[in-house]
Structures are given as C-alpha cells and as structure tokens.
Image 1 (cartoon, rainbow, N blue to C red):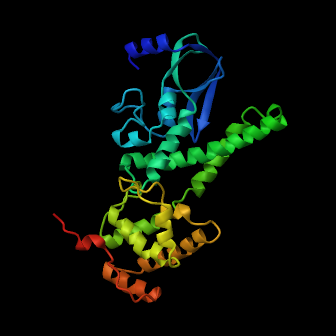
Image 2 (cartoon, one colour):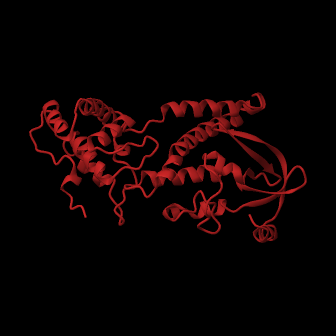
Image 3 (cartoon, rainbow, N blue to C red):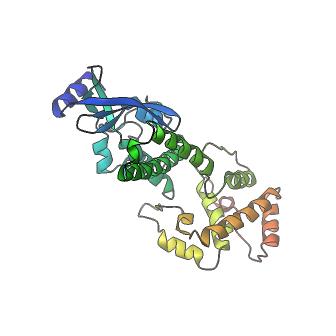
Length: 307
C-alpha cells in the first residue's frame, strides 16, 4: 500500500491495538495473525497470498481489491461482502508500530469465489487461476471442520482443557486428509486418456478443458446413465444467459445411487480408453463393450469448420 492510501485508511478507519498475535499454520503455510482489541481477527496482507500459494506481486486491476481477486474475469463473482472484507485494516502492532492486515474471514471468501468460478460451466478461469482451486477446496473443507470442532469445544467447556495448539493440530490433520481425498469426480486418468485420444498434450497442473471435451463427456458418460438422467441434470443445472452452468452435472447426482453408478461407469470407460490406440479404435471398443449400436459423433471438432 502506498503512503497516500495508507494515510487515507488511517484517517477513515478507527485503529485498534493488537492484544494477541501469533503464527497460523494454514495448510503448510505460516501466516502471521492477530486479534485486535475490538475482537477482530486479522491476518497479514502477504499471508492472504501465501495461504493460496500465490505471489503477492502482480497487476492490481481493480482498486480496492487485492490482486488475487482483482482480475476482470473474476469480477462477476465478487460479492459486496468480499469487497468489504478486502479493505486493508490499520492496527497497532504489539511492537507499537502501525501495521495493516486483512479481516481473516477474507480467506474463506476468496476460496469460495474460486470454487464458484471453477464450478461454472464453462469456467471463466485461466490456467494460472485453476492452480488456486484445489487449495481453495482444501482450505474451505478443513476450516469448516475445525470451526465445528471449536464450537463444540466452546459449548462443552473443553476449550479450557485442550492444549494451546490442539486446533492447529486438528487443522493439519484435516488438511492432510483432504489432500488425500481431493480427487475430481472425473479422475485425472480420464482426462489424460481423452487428451491422448485427441492427440493433444496433457497438462496435469491445469483444470482447463477444451469445450469439445465436454461434448465427449456428455456422449460417453452422461448419456450412458439411465434414460432421462442427462435431461434431468440439464434442467436442474441450466445454463445462464452467458451460456455458463453454475455447477458440474455430477454435483446433482445422488450420493446413494447416482454417484456410485457414475464411478462404476468411469472405471469401465477408462479401461476401454486405455486399450484403444486411436479415435476409431476407441469407437469400436466402446460399442463392443457397452453393446451400443448407435453411431456416435466421437470427436466433434473433427467436423467443425476450422478457420
């Protein structure tokens, strides 16, 4: 923050003293934090970027927003609450110096923004932004679990008996657990094989998918579920005026029947893909294994007018 903005913040915002300070271990990243005399919890400005494993440097495209959410393609997902929490708060550090930090609630709000943006169909995110999505998922899930544990500790009085760093240890355990659990519903191997059949290079660090891979998924996955399921999913998960779906289709499948059916189908489908040497080979193998007689338009872009 430059001096002019700093003076304006000091002038416009009441300044409170930090009564407690410490280091928060947030998914393997050390984030300086403090509690102010008004009970506001804050984290350091750099800590916000560290929490999402992103450098703080970068063009600040929108005044009043940290660059991590200031890109033009993210503005549609920025809420009034997020704007409010994005204001850098001046406070008096325990060393007596003036410091600036963000409301700690900005961390889950930023994570939520990226998750909502990633679940839009098609997603407006670019490759570099998709790298934040997995970390956002882990942070949201882990912080929510620790939050309910802290509430129970407070309600039962256990907060006075637990060790000082028990919640930190709990957070680490949840983060580790979610790193193991975090798997896209469509496993990486699925996309790796689709890209191979298309003759495209596969980047395991990118969640960005060409649009025609969505057609492939509709044809060889969702249309293979019981009759009417895909139409029902489209009704429950319609496109908005920009042609974007707010969520992925599989998020509307039931945990008891729909998702297990999808998982079984994907396992079988990936095996067929692995055994296929080409697009044409996959077409024959698919029809043989799934006993389909329909002629599928396998790779839509083959028939597109390429200019």
